[in-house]
Length: 131
Image 1 (spheres, rainbow, N blue to C red):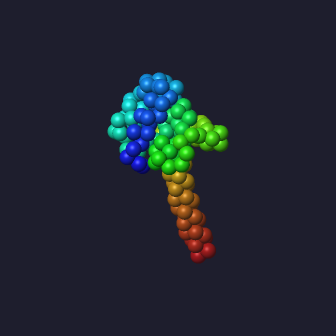
Image 2: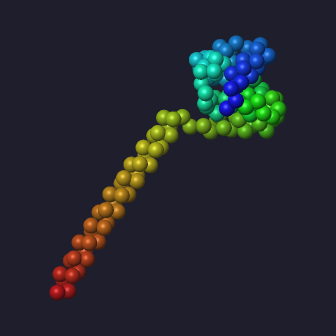
Image 3: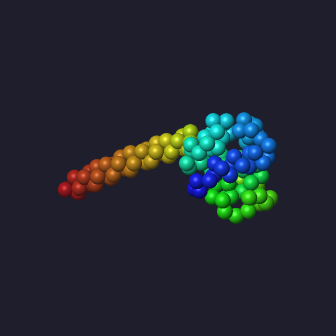
């Protein structure tokens, strides 16, 4: 990410005549996060947060993050960002899914081990019956 991200963000906030508080409220992002972005304390901004901020500021994420491309958004950019924001899962939701998947995998491994043990037992039983 370009080191002038915080400068471009500050500039757009001033251009739109907003405060960090107002931007936070409109974008539904915490004021602390906005403040950290503006002051350069966050080096790897979350893409969903950036999308929310860019929608409010009507500015391209590519431009605000890297200074590349056009600063203004087109309608397709806005639709894409709204889609990303709407379909974003929180870390807690991802962790729940990960834990559920791990439990299912553990159960499958256990079932497979039981099946193998049963298979071995039946094989031994067949050997004993054929003798």
